[in-house]
Length: 112
Image (cartoon, rainbow, N blue to C red; front, side):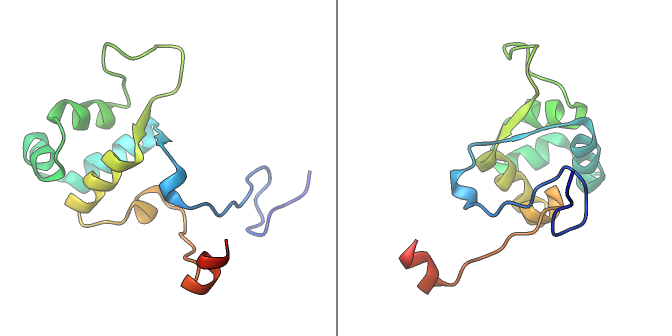
């Protein structure tokens, strides 16, 4: 197995326009991170500022699905919802997820 440019086995570095990503796979570690960033702010307050239901914040922090979601697949959150939550917390989605965002110069975007 080869190493990627970061030097970790098994993880590939891929640059993709985040507008093409519909949802983010969620896990309990991200839920803990969200709870830490929320600090003492109520779930209701954060949800109101993010424009979502407080139940979403609750489910994300617990790393659980709402009752209507399938039980056999990994939890996900839409990129739009996560960006709104991150914006309310004054943190970029890239920093929250711990992944760098590489922005292409406009000249290259026009070609692609």
